[in-house]
Length: 281
Image (cartoon, rainbow, N blue to C red; front, side):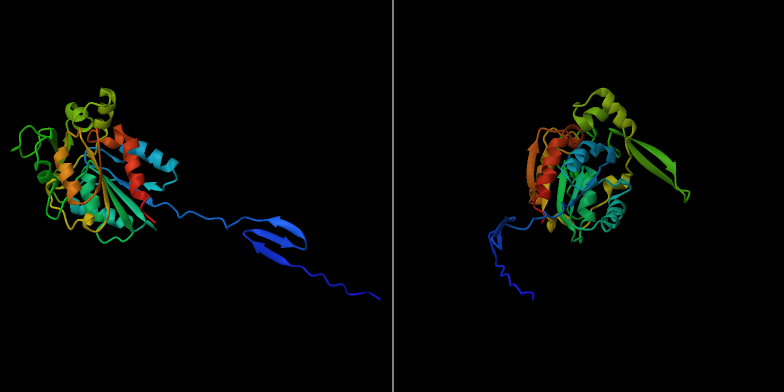
């Protein structure tokens, strides 16, 4: 006859220590914590450059685990460019840190308005216009820009127009930066002449509307912003950058950088972006 034997097993869990049938097992004190995914960083280039100028910043952000995209800027005008970017932003799920350099600042200022996923705006030596302000008007607000030595010129003297036929039979104009002024204007002579010549050769031109069109309702009124004031900027006067940063109540960093700081000082630019991203939860 088989006897039924009964075993009593007591299990006691205290701060991760399990006691079962006299055997002690050490477990983790708390369940593994999974950090929240990092926000997507969207980089928007300005006029007379292209998305490739963000290479050093992209490499650093990706190394730190940030999803990064740098869609091209059409440079056709604030309304057209911001409409395109606004549509692109709708394809991104989750929080976004939106970064604009130079004219790209005008684009993000308009594209982010009403988008709840955009949690932070970052301006890199960029325009942060209020409603109805233009790139041209802000450039002239304070002295110091070297884009023109004739303030009354219809086209800034550092630029030259290239007419082209449109599909409707009318004539359009693209504005290019002059190659012999490119190194000083965008880099304050901080890159080699060879590098400047290569970048000048691959620049994306801007339509006159990109400079003269008034801006819409600014997103910086409702979205927290960060701003890099480039103290050696030869395109936007540093005084104008400080004015725009202060008006937007931006978290502001000043550095001895030229206009295209994303090219010459990608570490400084990346650090500011990461500061903005660090506030996104």
